[in-house]
Amino acid sequence: MSNQWLKPALIAAVILQLVIMTGVFVKGFYPLWLGQEVRLETRPVDPRDLFRGNYARLGYDFTTLDSADFRPGEPVFLPLIEEGDLWVTGKALHEPPEQGLYLRGRVTGPRWADTRRALFGIEALFAPKEKAL
Image (cartoon, rainbow, N blue to C red):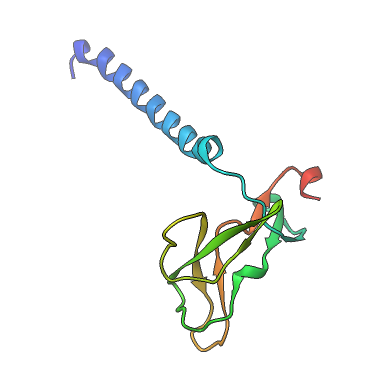
């Protein structure tokens, strides 16, 4: 590559990296800027992980599904209903509800069990040591 192309190539590489870093930043804060706050009742536990630091593991009553008609790996949708300051979940569905807020999760657990568990990605809250305690 000749010297006349070196400077524009370096500038393009720097600009591309800045665009990628900006995209990562915006993707992380997008739900906070435009999302709606939903408060759910939790049962906190205080574990520690040597590799990830302090966090509060959160348990929810709605993560246990009563129905065995959900297979492991399938998506599950829980409609959210506002009751005062907290939100509660409705009946687990195979498809997203037509309207309103809902949680989307994935069914886990063995196929032979009568009850299934679902993970929604909100089971842990990473925080500084003081806040996690």
